[in-house]
Every structure is written in C-alpha cells, then in structure tokens.
Image 1 (cartoon, helix red, strand yellow):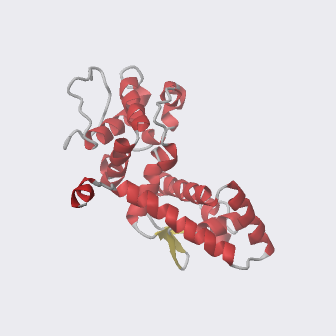
Image 2: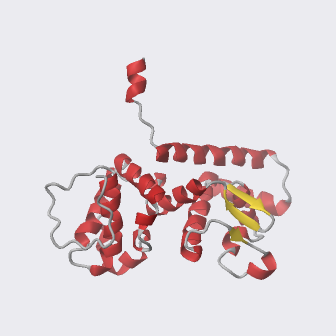
Image 3: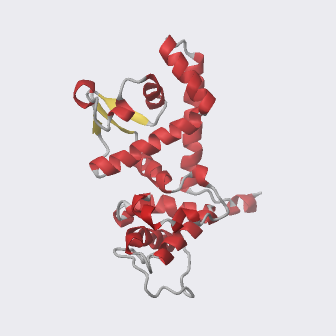
Length: 235
C-alpha cells in the first residue's frame, strides 16, 4: 500500500548500480546477437566466460581512476592512436578487440577524437566504486585491508582530498549506509591516523564520508586523529 511505498528509500548509488548493470546487460546481448569478425568474436567469448558485466564495470572504474589520476578529473580524453598509442590512454581507447568491445558497451560518448563519460555523475560514480563498489559488499570487516601501513599510500582514499568532490562523497556516504564492512574500514583508517601520518589523507576522507552518512562520533575517542582538510559540517 501507500505506507509501504513511503518506507521504500532508494538511494542514488543504488539507482546507478542498477542502471550500470542493466546497460551492460543490454550491450552484452547486442554483441551476442551481432555477427562479429573472428577477432572480435574470440574476444567476446573470452569476456563472456570471465563475466562480461564484471569486466565492463572494471573497465569503467579503471578509466575513471585514470582520468582523476592523469587529468585531475578533467572529463574529456583526447585520443589519437598514432600519437597516444603508447600512453595510459591506450588501455581504454586502443585498438585491441577486448578494449574496443568494452568501450563500445560502456557509458561513454565520442565526438571526433574526444571521449568522455556521458555525464559527469557517471565519472564520479565509477571513481567512487574504485574506493568501494557494489561488488565489495562484505558485511564482515577485513582488518587486513587497513593493517598494512606500507600500502596505505596506495589506497584510493589516499590519492586525493575528496572534499572538493561532493558528488563522490555523496555516493560513498550512501554506500556506508548499505555496507557495514565499508563503515568499519573507514573507522579503521581514522584510528590508524593516530599513529601513522601516512593514513592522514585517507582518514580525512573517511571522517568526511562518515559524517555525511550521519554516523555519530559523540562517544568516540578522537584524540590524536589526523584528518587535515576534513569536512565535518552537515553531520
């Protein structure tokens, strides 16, 4: 009834999860129905065997991460094979059949030599999934994710201060509400920052995400945490 509908709350991140899966499923069936040349058919069969949707999601996640890493989040990637064939861009826009099939099935648009995600929010969604995505729904917290301090600098949360990316923060705050394991991982980064300065960027992002998600820190021991640039407003 009406009261049931009023209790149904679908978050934006859930809508994007569902939309991406649907988009990739439709494009998988399109490719299966098309008559492909031998190289593309072999590539498609390999992708199907390995999980077409999974590979499509990874392709777009890695592209989003590369756009933020290599271009500071500027969305348009200009690619010319002769000029850029040995650059980072070739992993996503080169002529390899696997790449071509995944690119064609992705939420990308092309005008001439310029490629981009069809909307800025799609780029931001896939970047958020690098940090924690729909395939990471571990309800049990894995302490090994945060215990190796030598790799903390390599974690996606350590790569940039996300305060300037409110849409990414929003996606991740909604993921916190869905996934207890992610919440515990973020809390562990904050705790680690007390004794490891290398965790400070990840901790700042973590507490920003948790505050946005409505997590209360009223009874938490926050003495000694290092969270430079964190946004603690709106909690």
